[in-house]
Length: 234
Image 1: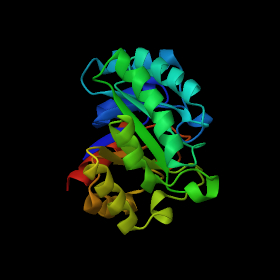
Image 2: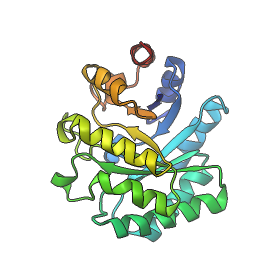
Image 3: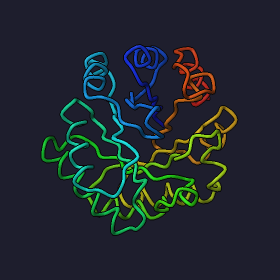
Image 4: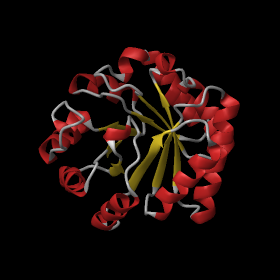
């Protein structure tokens, strides 16, 4: 299981790298769950990482606007992101997910076929009116995406594990793997969730708040990243 840590600036990225993160995921929490950061922030983190670990970038909690999403994805890819992560907040149906992701995939893969597209859904989809994450694996695979992820849309302290049961998470992971995709789990992860996470064993665990001392609006601390890595390896 790889640990993805989401810094919002270069200082946090350095702390995440020093703590042993496997992937640096550049985002802007001020703009939402998967809020997009600036191109120069992505470039700075990419230069700092210097090929040691891959860099991911979120492109926003997106409305159903495939053209806008494709341009945003291309911007993140050109800025140096190895993983381009799209939050499908305004997507309500599987056919919409396929259309939106197909545009994102084409924009990214036409630039560089080695870059990875991440389709992110939300465990709390019912309260925000977006597509169920259980529908994403097939849509992502049909569009040519590489990875599916579940997160939480509303950051009020409630975790993915309050909205999806262990069996639902296992089903999500299995569906992703059956479609040839990697699978990531995120969403207000706490140390109390680690035994469950290790049991269901996603390919990637995505975090921010837990390595900021419990407040995603705080700052990433290298010692907490290191502690999390140690806990996951036990």
